[in-house]
Image (tube, rainbow, N blue to C red):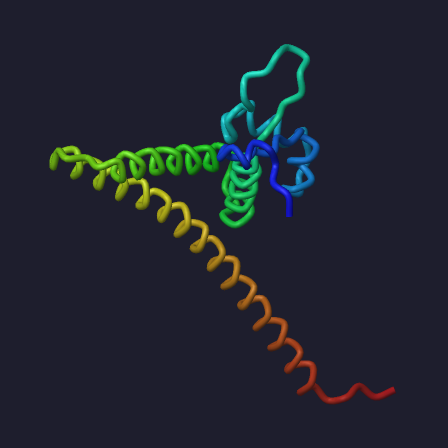
Length: 163
């Protein structure tokens, strides 16, 4: 297999740049949704571009879009709630990077851990609220099914109507 000239010189190959339509196809959504998510801050705006030039994206942008859509579907949260989740995740990732860069100050290390714990707690609150909503719907459906089955048994127990 031949290698690209940049690879032969020890350079990393250029990351594939994708147009918005390609991102939409990979993520299973529409360009309009992507632009809207950028507008409301769920997704970062694409790299700076010349006026009139196409938006271009990286695979990391596709991955983030897919994750945002997964969270919205899974948790059934509003766009505001989703934005809060995404911002919390961004903050968590920044704190994690800071931690891994080797924070020496024990006070700062404690602050980072406390912030990470708060972010995880907020995410748990959202997940638990969604779980409780689903449990309530399940209980309602089980109750409805029981009433239907009880009525069917009542019909089965009635004497057959004569013709």
